[in-house]
Image 1: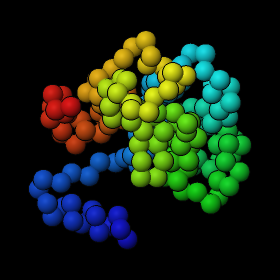
Image 2: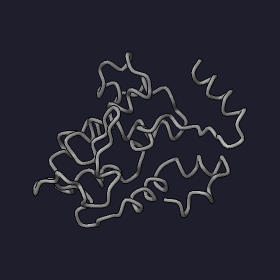
Image 3: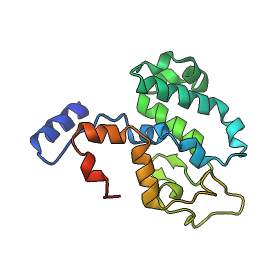
Amino acid sequence: MEQRLLKQTAEEKKNVILLDIICFEYVLLEFQELLKWVYAPNDEFWQKRASAIEARKVLVNSISSGFLNYKDINEVVKYDEHIDNHNIEQLTAKLLFDLTRNTGFEVSKGSIGDCWIKSCCEWEYRMDNDICGLDYRRLTASEKMKSIFEGTSLKEKFQAAGLEGRCDNNF
């Protein structure tokens, strides 16, 4: 009902365009560089979060190839034993949180980590042992936004909506 109302309202406005995106968390979850940014090469989280990493890989590959019945994917069911209680937005939010928790990239309900939105390493509470995959390739906030745009379905969705030229220099 909310989607129908949103669609109706958007159709009435000339300056509103709806994009076919699952949710914000899915955009970050599908980001090609996600794991390389969040985890340093020798980070123990690669092993500790192996099942979540595998579930992410299979889920993103399945959705990007058009298979949307995520509740039938073995790796996803193994990762989330309560899968029947979660819609795709809840599943992607949970998976993204599990992959990013206890890092500067943590994404949780209503909160996004400083490492997503600030230049490396402007994180005020960074400790000496806080390492990530960007320790040797520090990026500005603008470079991060461009990378996310280029490395997710956002670029394709914006192009399909005729918005591609509007994003190139506006980060």
